[in-house]
Length: 84
Image (cartoon, rainbow, N blue to C red):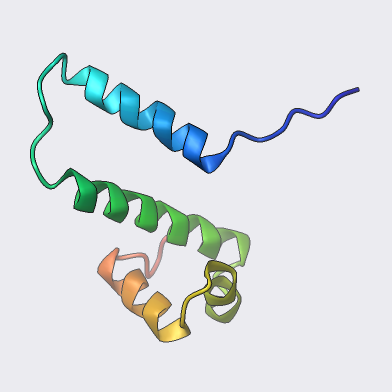
């Protein structure tokens, strides 16, 4: 039995970004798209990393490749204090 390879992050992002633009039916979305996308992706990335590390901030920071203080600031910024 052949194992299915997981989709690449860039491939998944491309698919969703194309769908986002298509949903605007030929019009451009509101400006500030870059920051909205980065914030949305970062929030989900941190939330899911905290889940898989059972909220171990040291382990999550290491996995993400960021400083634990930076992680704490992001948790506060995205209001993930009690996120499960």
